Image (cartoon, rainbow, N blue to C red; front, side, top):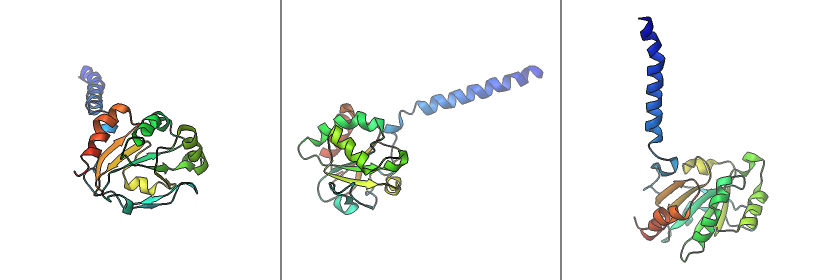
Length: 183
């Protein structure tokens, strides 16, 4: 009986390792399905980043053209990594990219830091709104930055991608959603 007691911790470890294996086998969080895909974009109205930007609202999405909405922050290292991809994407014909600056004050930053970030790396955004308290981001299901959404011409979310965009992700996920923007 004493020998069986020593097997319990081993059994528990095996079960935990099996659970971890199954969990990790589901793939990275960036490709996990989002409950927002296929639904209208949440209602919101965000102010502009600063005097040099235009904010935007839900009413501007779904006016016949697909729009990419990218949540970013100046303090976000993966946002720097994806930035050249966003620049290239926004330079393509008929591609509209809006930016949402996410909680700059989280790390003691301000809208000026976000503007400096865009001045340094280039501005891929047609409009840039500011979500300082993160409430709109919560409604959109954003868990961190960067996160990107493709909204079709009817205002329905077609793609939600969590993590830095890469040229491969743009080719395989973003561009097809823009071309098939009607659903």
